[in-house]
Amino acid sequence: MNNPYESNSARRRFLAREERLRALSEVDRDLVRLGQIPDLSRWLEQITATGGCARPVYLTGSSATFDAVSGVMVRRYSTAEEPGERLALRCRNRRSSRCGPCSWLHQGDSWHLVHAGLAGGKGVPDVVGTHPLVFLTLTAPSFGRVHRAGRCHRQRPGTCGHGNPLGCGQVHPDSGLLVGQPLCAECYDYPGHVLWNAHAGALWKAFTDNLYHHLAAQGGVSRSRIRRVLRVSAVKVAEYQRRGVIHFHAVVRLDGPDGSAEEPPGWATVAVLMDAVRTAVAAVSLAAPASSTYGERRLRFGTQMDVHEIGSGQDSPVSADRVAAYVAKYTTKGADSAGAVDRRVTSAAEIRALRLSAHMRALVGTCWRLGAVPELAHLRLRAWAHTLGYRGHCLTKTRAYSTTYRRLRAERGEHVRGGPVSGDEITVGNWRFAGAGHRPGEALIAEGIAADLQRTREIARDHLPFGWVGGARRGRRRAGVALHTGADHGG
Ligand SMILES: [Zn+2]
Ligand SMILES: [Zn+2]
Ligand SMILES: [Zn+2]
Image (cartoon, rainbow, N blue to C red):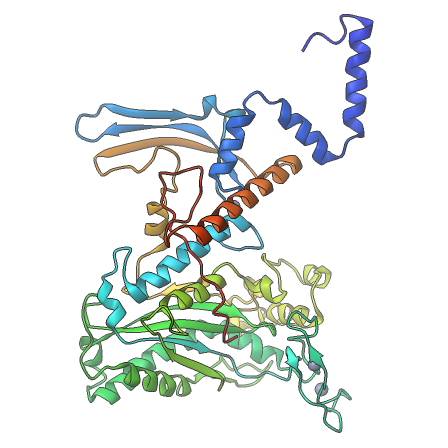
Protein backbone atom coordinates (compact mmCIF):
# COMPACT_ATOMS: atom_id res chain seq x y z
CA MET A 1 0.00 0.00 0.00
CA ASN A 2 1.17 3.58 -0.73
CA ASN A 3 2.09 5.76 2.17
CA PRO A 4 -1.36 7.00 3.26
CA TYR A 5 0.09 10.29 4.44
CA GLU A 6 1.89 11.26 1.19
CA SER A 7 -1.01 13.41 0.08
CA ASN A 8 -4.18 14.77 1.60
CA SER A 9 -6.43 12.79 -0.70
CA ALA A 10 -4.56 9.51 0.02
CA ARG A 11 -4.86 10.17 3.73
CA ARG A 12 -8.58 10.81 3.46
CA ARG A 13 -9.07 7.60 1.47
CA PHE A 14 -7.09 5.63 4.08
CA LEU A 15 -8.96 7.08 7.02
CA ALA A 16 -12.32 6.51 5.34
CA ARG A 17 -11.38 2.86 4.82
CA GLU A 18 -10.43 2.47 8.49
CA GLU A 19 -13.75 4.08 9.36
CA ARG A 20 -15.65 1.61 7.17
CA LEU A 21 -13.77 -1.37 8.67
CA ARG A 22 -14.59 -0.22 12.18
CA ALA A 23 -18.26 -0.19 11.28
CA LEU A 24 -18.15 -3.88 10.32
CA SER A 25 -18.87 -6.79 12.64
CA GLU A 26 -15.94 -8.75 14.02
CA VAL A 27 -16.63 -11.62 11.60
CA ASP A 28 -16.76 -9.33 8.57
CA ARG A 29 -13.59 -7.50 9.61
CA ASP A 30 -11.84 -10.84 9.91
CA LEU A 31 -13.12 -11.89 6.48
CA VAL A 32 -11.79 -8.66 4.95
CA ARG A 33 -8.41 -9.38 6.57
CA LEU A 34 -8.42 -12.94 5.22
CA GLY A 35 -9.30 -11.69 1.75
CA GLN A 36 -6.17 -9.57 1.77
CA ILE A 37 -3.60 -12.18 2.80
CA PRO A 38 -1.44 -13.04 -0.23
CA ASP A 39 -1.44 -16.84 0.31
CA LEU A 40 -5.18 -17.25 0.96
CA SER A 41 -5.47 -20.24 -1.38
CA ARG A 42 -2.76 -22.10 0.54
CA TRP A 43 -4.52 -21.31 3.84
CA LEU A 44 -7.75 -22.70 2.37
CA GLU A 45 -5.86 -25.84 1.31
CA GLN A 46 -4.61 -26.28 4.86
CA ILE A 47 -8.06 -25.92 6.37
CA THR A 48 -9.49 -28.31 3.77
CA ALA A 49 -6.78 -30.84 4.67
CA THR A 50 -7.98 -30.67 8.29
CA GLY A 51 -11.49 -31.46 7.04
CA GLY A 52 -12.66 -28.06 8.27
CA CYS A 53 -11.63 -28.87 11.85
CA ALA A 54 -13.37 -26.52 14.30
CA ARG A 55 -10.31 -25.99 16.48
CA PRO A 56 -7.12 -26.79 14.55
CA VAL A 57 -3.74 -26.86 16.21
CA TYR A 58 -1.07 -24.75 14.53
CA LEU A 59 2.53 -25.93 14.44
CA THR A 60 5.63 -24.22 13.22
CA GLY A 61 8.89 -25.98 12.35
CA SER A 62 10.41 -28.34 9.83
CA SER A 63 11.09 -31.98 9.09
CA ALA A 64 13.55 -33.88 6.93
CA THR A 65 13.21 -37.45 5.70
CA PHE A 66 16.30 -39.57 5.04
CA ASP A 67 16.89 -42.89 3.31
CA ALA A 68 17.71 -45.26 6.18
CA VAL A 69 20.38 -47.10 4.18
CA SER A 70 22.24 -44.39 2.28
CA GLY A 71 21.52 -41.53 4.67
CA VAL A 72 20.58 -39.30 1.72
CA MET A 73 17.85 -36.73 2.38
CA VAL A 74 14.73 -37.74 0.40
CA ARG A 75 12.54 -34.71 1.16
CA ARG A 76 12.32 -31.71 3.36
CA TYR A 77 9.44 -29.62 4.58
CA SER A 78 9.37 -26.33 6.44
CA THR A 79 6.51 -24.07 7.51
CA ALA A 80 8.63 -21.06 6.48
CA GLU A 81 6.70 -20.84 3.19
CA GLU A 82 3.27 -21.38 4.73
CA PRO A 83 0.74 -18.61 5.50
CA GLY A 84 1.75 -17.10 8.82
CA GLU A 85 4.68 -19.56 8.79
CA ARG A 86 2.54 -22.25 10.39
CA LEU A 87 0.69 -25.44 9.51
CA ALA A 88 -2.84 -26.35 10.64
CA LEU A 89 -3.49 -29.86 11.98
CA ARG A 90 -6.72 -31.54 13.08
CA CYS A 91 -7.60 -31.26 16.77
CA ARG A 92 -8.62 -34.96 16.63
CA ASN A 93 -11.18 -34.48 19.38
CA ARG A 94 -13.61 -37.42 19.36
CA ARG A 95 -16.60 -35.55 20.76
CA SER A 96 -19.12 -34.02 18.41
CA SER A 97 -19.78 -31.24 20.93
CA ARG A 98 -16.18 -30.08 20.46
CA CYS A 99 -15.43 -30.67 16.78
CA GLY A 100 -17.91 -32.03 14.23
CA PRO A 101 -15.45 -32.94 11.44
CA CYS A 102 -12.90 -34.66 13.72
CA SER A 103 -15.57 -36.56 15.65
CA TRP A 104 -16.96 -37.73 12.30
CA LEU A 105 -13.56 -39.22 11.40
CA HIS A 106 -13.33 -40.83 14.83
CA GLN A 107 -16.77 -42.33 14.30
CA GLY A 108 -15.54 -43.80 11.01
CA ASP A 109 -12.49 -45.29 12.71
CA SER A 110 -14.73 -46.74 15.42
CA TRP A 111 -16.93 -48.31 12.75
CA HIS A 112 -13.91 -50.02 11.19
CA LEU A 113 -12.60 -51.09 14.58
CA VAL A 114 -15.88 -52.75 15.55
CA HIS A 115 -16.64 -54.10 12.09
CA ALA A 116 -13.21 -55.74 11.66
CA GLY A 117 -13.88 -57.75 14.83
CA LEU A 118 -17.22 -58.92 13.40
CA ALA A 119 -16.29 -59.72 9.82
CA GLY A 120 -12.49 -59.49 9.53
CA GLY A 121 -10.33 -57.05 7.58
CA LYS A 122 -7.86 -54.39 8.79
CA GLY A 123 -5.48 -57.18 9.78
CA VAL A 124 -8.15 -59.28 11.52
CA PRO A 125 -8.69 -62.77 9.96
CA ASP A 126 -12.04 -63.21 8.16
CA VAL A 127 -12.81 -66.40 10.12
CA VAL A 128 -13.93 -64.25 13.09
CA GLY A 129 -17.24 -63.94 11.22
CA THR A 130 -17.85 -67.66 11.84
CA HIS A 131 -17.18 -67.50 15.62
CA PRO A 132 -20.09 -67.17 18.09
CA LEU A 133 -20.93 -63.44 18.16
CA VAL A 134 -23.52 -61.62 20.27
CA PHE A 135 -24.53 -58.01 20.74
CA LEU A 136 -25.66 -57.07 24.23
CA THR A 137 -26.93 -54.07 26.14
CA LEU A 138 -26.41 -53.89 29.90
CA THR A 139 -28.27 -51.28 31.89
CA ALA A 140 -28.18 -49.85 35.40
CA PRO A 141 -30.95 -50.54 37.92
CA SER A 142 -33.48 -47.87 38.90
CA PHE A 143 -32.44 -45.19 41.39
CA GLY A 144 -35.90 -43.66 41.49
CA ARG A 145 -38.65 -43.01 38.99
CA VAL A 146 -37.79 -40.64 36.15
CA HIS A 147 -40.02 -39.19 33.42
CA ARG A 148 -39.74 -41.27 30.29
CA ALA A 149 -40.22 -40.60 26.59
CA GLY A 150 -43.56 -41.70 25.18
CA ARG A 151 -46.22 -42.64 27.71
CA CYS A 152 -44.79 -41.75 31.12
CA HIS A 153 -45.60 -43.49 34.43
CA ARG A 154 -49.37 -43.63 34.81
CA GLN A 155 -51.02 -41.48 37.39
CA ARG A 156 -51.69 -43.11 40.74
CA PRO A 157 -53.52 -41.93 43.82
CA GLY A 158 -51.49 -40.48 46.67
CA THR A 159 -48.13 -38.81 46.93
CA CYS A 160 -44.64 -39.72 48.10
CA GLY A 161 -43.43 -38.67 51.54
CA HIS A 162 -42.39 -35.33 50.05
CA GLY A 163 -45.83 -34.54 48.70
CA ASN A 164 -44.97 -35.25 45.03
CA PRO A 165 -47.29 -37.31 42.78
CA LEU A 166 -46.37 -40.98 42.31
CA GLY A 167 -47.14 -40.96 38.57
CA CYS A 168 -47.21 -38.51 35.69
CA GLY A 169 -49.75 -39.60 33.05
CA GLN A 170 -48.32 -37.39 30.30
CA VAL A 171 -46.86 -38.36 26.92
CA HIS A 172 -43.37 -36.84 26.54
CA PRO A 173 -41.64 -36.30 23.19
CA ASP A 174 -38.21 -38.01 22.85
CA SER A 175 -36.39 -34.71 23.22
CA GLY A 176 -38.70 -33.45 26.00
CA LEU A 177 -36.92 -31.54 28.75
CA LEU A 178 -38.63 -33.58 31.47
CA VAL A 179 -37.38 -36.93 30.12
CA GLY A 180 -34.80 -38.38 32.53
CA GLN A 181 -35.75 -35.99 35.36
CA PRO A 182 -36.93 -37.69 38.57
CA LEU A 183 -40.58 -37.59 39.62
CA CYS A 184 -39.32 -36.64 43.07
CA ALA A 185 -35.75 -35.41 43.49
CA GLU A 186 -35.88 -36.07 47.26
CA CYS A 187 -36.84 -39.72 46.71
CA TYR A 188 -34.12 -40.14 44.11
CA ASP A 189 -31.04 -42.09 45.22
CA TYR A 190 -28.28 -39.74 44.04
CA PRO A 191 -25.42 -41.42 45.96
CA GLY A 192 -26.48 -44.83 44.58
CA HIS A 193 -26.57 -43.44 41.04
CA VAL A 194 -23.12 -41.83 41.29
CA LEU A 195 -21.61 -44.92 42.96
CA TRP A 196 -22.99 -47.05 40.14
CA ASN A 197 -21.40 -44.87 37.43
CA ALA A 198 -18.15 -44.86 39.39
CA HIS A 199 -18.15 -48.66 39.52
CA ALA A 200 -19.47 -49.30 36.01
CA GLY A 201 -15.99 -50.34 34.83
CA ALA A 202 -15.59 -52.74 37.77
CA LEU A 203 -19.06 -54.16 37.11
CA TRP A 204 -18.10 -54.86 33.51
CA LYS A 205 -14.89 -56.55 34.66
CA ALA A 206 -16.87 -58.69 37.11
CA PHE A 207 -19.24 -59.61 34.28
CA THR A 208 -16.44 -60.83 31.98
CA ASP A 209 -14.85 -62.85 34.84
CA ASN A 210 -18.25 -64.40 35.56
CA LEU A 211 -18.69 -65.12 31.86
CA TYR A 212 -15.56 -67.29 31.85
CA HIS A 213 -16.82 -69.14 34.94
CA HIS A 214 -20.30 -69.67 33.51
CA LEU A 215 -18.86 -70.85 30.18
CA ALA A 216 -16.64 -73.27 32.12
CA ALA A 217 -19.73 -74.68 33.86
CA GLN A 218 -21.55 -75.06 30.52
CA GLY A 219 -18.59 -76.81 28.89
CA GLY A 220 -17.79 -79.01 31.86
CA VAL A 221 -14.32 -77.45 32.12
CA SER A 222 -12.75 -76.35 35.39
CA ARG A 223 -12.56 -72.61 36.11
CA SER A 224 -8.78 -72.77 36.22
CA ARG A 225 -8.60 -74.36 32.78
CA ILE A 226 -11.22 -72.36 30.88
CA ARG A 227 -8.83 -69.63 29.67
CA ARG A 228 -6.65 -72.34 28.14
CA VAL A 229 -9.64 -73.63 26.17
CA LEU A 230 -11.21 -70.45 24.82
CA ARG A 231 -10.96 -66.69 24.91
CA VAL A 232 -13.68 -64.05 25.31
CA SER A 233 -12.98 -61.11 22.96
CA ALA A 234 -15.12 -58.03 23.35
CA VAL A 235 -15.59 -54.37 22.51
CA LYS A 236 -17.87 -52.17 24.54
CA VAL A 237 -19.07 -48.61 24.39
CA ALA A 238 -20.51 -46.57 27.26
CA GLU A 239 -23.60 -44.52 26.61
CA TYR A 240 -25.34 -42.06 28.93
CA GLN A 241 -29.05 -42.52 29.31
CA ARG A 242 -31.12 -39.37 29.70
CA ARG A 243 -31.25 -39.93 33.48
CA GLY A 244 -27.43 -39.60 33.45
CA VAL A 245 -26.52 -43.20 34.13
CA ILE A 246 -24.07 -45.24 32.07
CA HIS A 247 -25.15 -48.27 30.14
CA PHE A 248 -23.06 -50.51 27.94
CA HIS A 249 -23.47 -51.78 24.41
CA ALA A 250 -21.04 -54.56 23.65
CA VAL A 251 -20.02 -57.15 21.13
CA VAL A 252 -18.82 -60.42 22.66
CA ARG A 253 -17.05 -63.03 20.55
CA LEU A 254 -15.68 -66.45 21.44
CA ASP A 255 -12.25 -67.34 20.07
CA GLY A 256 -9.81 -70.16 20.61
CA PRO A 257 -7.24 -69.65 23.39
CA ASP A 258 -4.77 -67.98 21.01
CA GLY A 259 -7.20 -65.39 19.77
CA SER A 260 -9.06 -64.35 16.64
CA ALA A 261 -7.49 -66.78 14.15
CA GLU A 262 -8.50 -69.82 16.17
CA GLU A 263 -11.91 -71.52 16.49
CA PRO A 264 -13.37 -71.93 19.98
CA PRO A 265 -14.15 -75.56 21.01
CA GLY A 266 -17.21 -77.12 19.33
CA TRP A 267 -19.42 -77.01 22.43
CA ALA A 268 -19.03 -73.21 22.70
CA THR A 269 -21.95 -72.29 20.43
CA VAL A 270 -23.93 -69.03 20.14
CA ALA A 271 -26.71 -70.57 22.26
CA VAL A 272 -24.22 -71.48 24.99
CA LEU A 273 -22.72 -67.98 24.85
CA MET A 274 -26.14 -66.30 25.10
CA ASP A 275 -27.08 -68.43 28.10
CA ALA A 276 -23.77 -67.77 29.81
CA VAL A 277 -24.10 -64.01 29.18
CA ARG A 278 -27.56 -63.94 30.82
CA THR A 279 -26.54 -65.88 33.91
CA ALA A 280 -23.18 -64.06 34.22
CA VAL A 281 -24.87 -60.63 34.17
CA ALA A 282 -27.43 -61.68 36.77
CA ALA A 283 -24.68 -62.98 39.07
CA VAL A 284 -22.71 -59.71 39.18
CA SER A 285 -22.79 -58.08 42.61
CA LEU A 286 -20.19 -55.72 44.05
CA ALA A 287 -20.09 -53.98 47.42
CA ALA A 288 -19.41 -50.24 47.29
CA PRO A 289 -17.04 -49.04 50.04
CA ALA A 290 -19.18 -48.58 53.16
CA SER A 291 -19.47 -45.05 54.50
CA SER A 292 -21.43 -43.32 57.26
CA THR A 293 -22.56 -40.81 54.57
CA TYR A 294 -24.77 -43.32 52.73
CA GLY A 295 -24.39 -46.66 54.55
CA GLU A 296 -23.83 -49.87 52.62
CA ARG A 297 -24.55 -50.42 48.94
CA ARG A 298 -24.53 -53.45 46.69
CA LEU A 299 -24.10 -52.68 43.02
CA ARG A 300 -25.70 -54.78 40.30
CA PHE A 301 -26.77 -54.48 36.69
CA GLY A 302 -30.38 -53.62 35.96
CA THR A 303 -32.81 -56.40 35.10
CA GLN A 304 -33.35 -54.84 31.66
CA MET A 305 -30.84 -56.47 29.35
CA ASP A 306 -30.71 -57.47 25.71
CA VAL A 307 -28.70 -60.20 24.00
CA HIS A 308 -28.91 -60.83 20.26
CA GLU A 309 -27.06 -63.11 17.95
CA ILE A 310 -25.20 -61.08 15.31
CA GLY A 311 -26.29 -62.42 11.93
CA SER A 312 -23.90 -62.81 9.02
CA GLY A 313 -26.28 -61.61 6.28
CA GLN A 314 -26.69 -57.93 5.27
CA ASP A 315 -30.45 -58.28 5.83
CA SER A 316 -30.14 -59.58 9.36
CA PRO A 317 -31.77 -57.13 11.81
CA VAL A 318 -28.60 -57.37 13.91
CA SER A 319 -26.03 -57.44 11.11
CA ALA A 320 -22.31 -56.64 11.42
CA ASP A 321 -22.81 -53.35 9.52
CA ARG A 322 -25.62 -52.22 11.80
CA VAL A 323 -23.94 -53.19 15.03
CA ALA A 324 -20.76 -51.39 13.95
CA ALA A 325 -22.73 -48.26 13.08
CA TYR A 326 -24.70 -48.40 16.30
CA VAL A 327 -21.62 -48.72 18.49
CA ALA A 328 -19.62 -46.14 16.48
CA LYS A 329 -22.33 -43.54 16.94
CA TYR A 330 -21.81 -43.50 20.70
CA THR A 331 -18.03 -43.04 20.49
CA THR A 332 -18.49 -39.34 19.70
CA LYS A 333 -20.73 -38.63 22.68
CA GLY A 334 -19.83 -37.73 26.23
CA ALA A 335 -21.81 -37.00 29.37
CA ASP A 336 -22.78 -33.68 27.77
CA SER A 337 -25.08 -35.63 25.42
CA ALA A 338 -27.21 -36.40 28.50
CA GLY A 339 -27.15 -32.72 29.44
CA ALA A 340 -24.14 -32.75 31.81
CA VAL A 341 -20.90 -30.85 31.27
CA ASP A 342 -18.23 -31.48 28.63
CA ARG A 343 -15.24 -30.39 30.72
CA ARG A 344 -13.91 -30.72 34.25
CA VAL A 345 -15.40 -28.68 37.06
CA THR A 346 -13.11 -27.14 39.65
CA SER A 347 -15.30 -25.83 42.46
CA ALA A 348 -18.72 -26.11 44.10
CA ALA A 349 -19.37 -22.50 43.12
CA GLU A 350 -18.79 -23.41 39.48
CA ILE A 351 -21.36 -26.23 39.75
CA ARG A 352 -23.95 -23.75 41.07
CA ALA A 353 -23.27 -21.43 38.14
CA LEU A 354 -23.45 -24.08 35.38
CA ARG A 355 -26.44 -24.06 33.04
CA LEU A 356 -27.78 -27.50 33.90
CA SER A 357 -31.10 -29.15 34.65
CA ALA A 358 -31.84 -29.59 38.36
CA HIS A 359 -31.20 -33.35 38.04
CA MET A 360 -27.82 -32.95 36.32
CA ARG A 361 -26.78 -30.31 38.85
CA ALA A 362 -27.71 -32.70 41.66
CA LEU A 363 -25.64 -35.48 40.07
CA VAL A 364 -22.57 -33.29 39.51
CA GLY A 365 -23.06 -31.89 43.02
CA THR A 366 -23.31 -35.41 44.52
CA CYS A 367 -20.01 -36.33 42.82
CA TRP A 368 -18.47 -33.22 44.36
CA ARG A 369 -19.85 -34.00 47.80
CA LEU A 370 -18.91 -37.70 47.78
CA GLY A 371 -15.51 -36.69 46.39
CA ALA A 372 -14.68 -35.46 49.91
CA VAL A 373 -15.53 -38.83 51.55
CA PRO A 374 -12.22 -40.53 52.52
CA GLU A 375 -13.51 -44.07 51.79
CA LEU A 376 -14.16 -43.02 48.19
CA ALA A 377 -10.91 -41.14 47.55
CA HIS A 378 -9.77 -43.78 45.02
CA LEU A 379 -12.82 -43.05 42.85
CA ARG A 380 -11.61 -39.44 42.31
CA LEU A 381 -15.22 -38.28 42.11
CA ARG A 382 -14.35 -34.58 41.99
CA ALA A 383 -12.07 -35.03 39.00
CA TRP A 384 -14.85 -37.01 37.32
CA ALA A 385 -17.84 -34.94 38.42
CA HIS A 386 -18.33 -33.73 34.82
CA THR A 387 -18.76 -37.37 33.65
CA LEU A 388 -21.13 -38.04 36.58
CA GLY A 389 -18.59 -40.33 38.24
CA TYR A 390 -17.76 -42.59 35.30
CA ARG A 391 -13.99 -42.77 34.78
CA GLY A 392 -13.76 -45.26 31.92
CA HIS A 393 -13.07 -44.64 28.28
CA CYS A 394 -15.97 -44.36 25.93
CA LEU A 395 -14.84 -47.39 23.91
CA THR A 396 -12.74 -50.24 25.26
CA LYS A 397 -11.85 -53.58 23.77
CA THR A 398 -9.88 -56.67 24.60
CA ARG A 399 -6.56 -56.90 22.80
CA ALA A 400 -7.53 -59.78 20.51
CA TYR A 401 -10.88 -58.30 19.45
CA SER A 402 -9.75 -56.15 16.55
CA THR A 403 -7.31 -53.60 15.21
CA THR A 404 -6.46 -50.34 17.04
CA TYR A 405 -7.29 -46.66 16.55
CA ARG A 406 -3.58 -46.00 16.18
CA ARG A 407 -3.34 -48.38 13.23
CA LEU A 408 -6.48 -47.01 11.60
CA ARG A 409 -5.20 -43.44 11.89
CA ALA A 410 -1.83 -44.45 10.47
CA GLU A 411 -3.64 -46.06 7.54
CA ARG A 412 -5.48 -42.78 6.92
CA GLY A 413 -2.06 -41.15 6.65
CA GLU A 414 -2.86 -38.74 9.42
CA HIS A 415 0.55 -37.43 10.40
CA VAL A 416 2.50 -34.26 9.80
CA ARG A 417 2.97 -34.08 6.05
CA GLY A 418 4.92 -36.18 3.60
CA GLY A 419 2.72 -39.18 2.69
CA PRO A 420 3.16 -42.69 4.02
CA VAL A 421 6.57 -43.19 5.54
CA SER A 422 8.03 -46.57 4.62
CA GLY A 423 10.18 -48.65 6.97
CA ASP A 424 13.26 -47.66 4.93
CA GLU A 425 12.95 -43.97 5.72
CA ILE A 426 13.58 -41.98 8.85
CA THR A 427 11.92 -38.63 9.48
CA VAL A 428 13.41 -36.12 11.86
CA GLY A 429 11.20 -33.22 12.82
CA ASN A 430 11.40 -30.14 14.95
CA TRP A 431 7.97 -28.70 15.80
CA ARG A 432 6.67 -26.03 18.08
CA PHE A 433 3.08 -25.27 19.13
CA ALA A 434 2.01 -22.02 17.47
CA GLY A 435 -1.58 -21.60 18.61
CA ALA A 436 -4.97 -23.24 18.30
CA GLY A 437 -8.45 -22.41 17.11
CA HIS A 438 -9.99 -20.03 14.61
CA ARG A 439 -10.73 -16.34 14.54
CA PRO A 440 -14.42 -15.63 13.89
CA GLY A 441 -14.08 -15.24 10.10
CA GLU A 442 -11.84 -18.27 9.84
CA ALA A 443 -14.35 -20.34 11.81
CA LEU A 444 -17.07 -19.40 9.32
CA ILE A 445 -14.95 -20.50 6.36
CA ALA A 446 -13.90 -23.75 8.10
CA GLU A 447 -17.57 -24.53 8.77
CA GLY A 448 -18.33 -24.01 5.09
CA ILE A 449 -15.47 -26.32 4.08
CA ALA A 450 -16.65 -28.99 6.53
CA ALA A 451 -20.20 -28.74 5.13
CA ASP A 452 -18.90 -29.07 1.54
CA LEU A 453 -16.86 -32.14 2.43
CA GLN A 454 -19.87 -33.64 4.19
CA ARG A 455 -21.99 -33.09 1.09
CA THR A 456 -19.34 -34.71 -1.11
CA ARG A 457 -19.27 -37.72 1.19
CA GLU A 458 -23.02 -38.05 1.17
CA ILE A 459 -23.13 -37.94 -2.63
CA ALA A 460 -20.34 -40.52 -2.78
CA ARG A 461 -22.10 -42.74 -0.25
CA ASP A 462 -25.35 -42.67 -2.19
CA HIS A 463 -23.91 -42.99 -5.69
CA LEU A 464 -20.59 -44.85 -5.53
CA PRO A 465 -19.90 -48.52 -4.75
CA PHE A 466 -19.54 -49.45 -1.09
CA GLY A 467 -16.22 -48.52 0.45
CA TRP A 468 -15.39 -45.60 -1.83
CA VAL A 469 -16.46 -42.72 0.34
CA GLY A 470 -14.14 -39.96 1.36
CA GLY A 471 -12.65 -36.53 0.75
CA ALA A 472 -12.77 -35.59 -2.91
CA ARG A 473 -9.77 -33.29 -2.86
CA ARG A 474 -7.36 -35.99 -1.85
CA GLY A 475 -8.01 -38.69 -4.41
CA ARG A 476 -5.01 -40.78 -3.33
CA ARG A 477 -6.57 -41.44 0.01
CA ARG A 478 -9.05 -44.27 0.38
CA ALA A 479 -11.22 -43.27 3.27
CA GLY A 480 -13.69 -46.18 3.07
CA VAL A 481 -15.89 -44.80 5.81
CA ALA A 482 -19.50 -45.69 5.22
CA LEU A 483 -21.89 -45.28 8.07
CA HIS A 484 -25.19 -47.08 7.98
CA THR A 485 -27.10 -45.57 10.81
CA GLY A 486 -30.66 -46.43 11.61
CA ALA A 487 -30.23 -49.53 13.75
CA ASP A 488 -31.40 -47.44 16.63
CA HIS A 489 -32.86 -50.08 18.87
CA GLY A 490 -32.20 -50.45 22.60
CA GLY A 491 -31.42 -47.41 24.75
ZN1 LIG B 1 -11.09 -30.92 15.00
ZN1 LIG C 1 -43.60 -37.80 32.95
ZN1 LIG D 1 -40.42 -38.01 47.33
